[in-house]
Length: 178
Image (cartoon, rainbow, N blue to C red):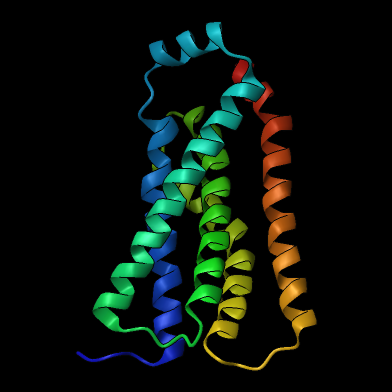
């Protein structure tokens, strides 16, 4: 098939990572039975519980992101010029996807465990993040950006991740009581 153009490769990579995130992170809450959640309710504080889920899914998604990057590079080549920059962008994107879908999995778990609902709620939240990640990853493909723009995009992505963690910690105890 050959190597696709850089823009196509970039878009395919991020869409693939998005669907990997949905499938990997959705199982964190959706596979938990009512009995197990009741057990967790008796032994853990809601903040500790959601932070542990966020951390576990973050590590899982970082691993999946690196594996996806390696497989994409192996099968489709690598159009990026600097491997380190694109790897950093991949890790930042995987972290953001993981955090958003972990929080959404907690919400949809209370809605009779509909994984489709998580995907529907997640796309509007992740579209701006994906657009920023695609723009940031273009920097690794050799497009010329000012360092100021790269720092601003990275700062916005980190702020979105921090906001997701803060919202999870603030709102999850209300879900936990239900």
